[in-house]
Length: 116
Image (tube, rainbow, N blue to C red):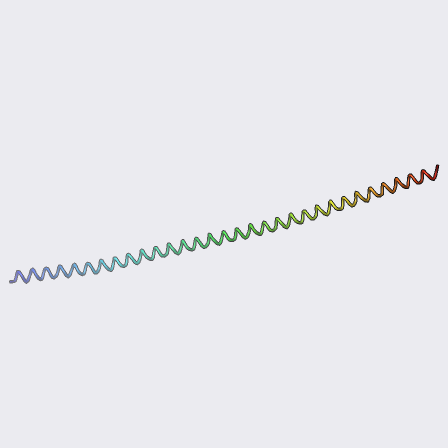
């Protein structure tokens, strides 16, 4: 009887120890899972932050390129306007020079006709 009681007591102690170890292991397992979930969440936040920074840099670069293109277009328009004005002045100057030469020729011809 003592042997049966002793064996039951030993079995009860082993069962209690196993149950306690399971609970301790289980809480440790939950702690590890929470730690891994926290690490994954932190990595996801970091990846999202990097994606936002990349998108922001791309937007800034696109705006910079658009601004540069507008500046170049304005510069080209100004250059074209200046060139057009220069050509117009040259044409007007050439016309005036041609008129003066024609007037000189006509006046020279008139003087020559008066003298003779």
